[in-house]
Amino acid sequence: MSCLYVNYNMNDTRCQLAQDHVIGWSSRTDCAAASVQSIHEYAHAGFTYDVMYRTFSRSQIENITAGFYQICQQFTNMPNTRPDLDNLAQIKGDNGQGFGSGMATLCYSILGDYAANPTLIQEVPQQYWGKSIVDSWMNREENYLQRIKMIVMPSIKKGQTTNSTPNHTWLRTSCTKTDGHSRTRHHIPERLVCHGHGITHGPH
Image 1 (cartoon, rainbow, N blue to C red):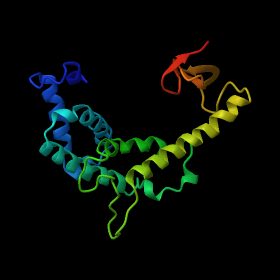
Image 2 (image 1 turned 90 degrees about the vertical axis):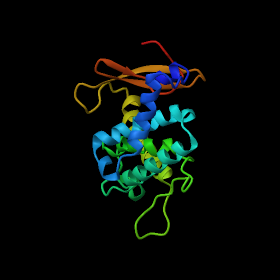
Image 3 (image 1 turned 120 degrees about the vertical axis):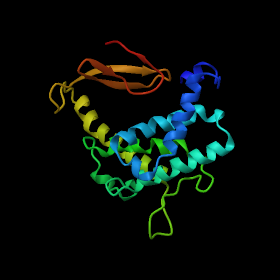
């Protein structure tokens, strides 16, 4: 974002560092990507690629997307990941699979850019067909969010003020979106989180 702030002035060190960040992370080998820390950083690399896209040459984009594509496939095909094999009924609002859907951030950033597989069809060994990587990850995330709603909303509708997690207090305060729809927000210790974009806070 610092490069965007200076209007993509490529003589500025911040813009050069942003480019190097994307190129460097896209150039890592697959085996170097298989760690939680790397997966988190690849989300940032994907965001940076999106912001810096206009500054890359066509050949650079081809190289970057080729590298990110291989890593996206690796994330999706890790034995303990495989969103295409999800039993959606087993995904609950309190397990890690919803949080794990953030691993797909890198994949989303190159959707449509990798010429050899622009729609990001999953490559599965010994299989001549594959599912959409994007659909698989989004199905997991959507199901996770629906499960959270199933857990939280009945408690709020019954007027309960606490959930099952110690020290977390649920408040029946509202947020109003600019389109007039209301959203319930909850109070996690020392922090209020209001769900929905373009919101204005209602009375506390």
